[in-house]
Amino acid sequence: MTLPVPGEPVRGSKTGKPIMALFDLLGRTWCMGIIWQLSLSNATFRQLQARCEDISPTLLNKRLHELAQLGLVKKTETGYGLTEQASALALLIKPMGPWARSWAENLPQQLKSKEKNDA
Image (cartoon, rainbow, N blue to C red; front, side, top):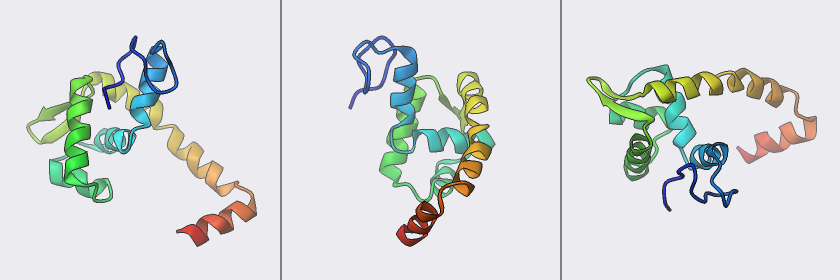
């Protein structure tokens, strides 16, 4: 799978509009989770792996490499951190946390019961 780059075809867009390239990137397994976790604080590889529910080292390494190539993650003295660009993105994502909790609390009862049974 190639990196989702604006201007190139991406999942959901033949033209690669920037928003669609971003959605393609964030929709990849663990990309948004890694950005979310690094928005809380920088982390070493092992710390980040634990924060990401024990993501496999191979997948974490791949995602960190992709995010670095796209200018969103950088190596720091304390491990990995977000670039300025990614920090700005994290500020846009953070309000979704409370919204998602409210949404989950207000799901129809039959969906809440199904969710508990599937866990």
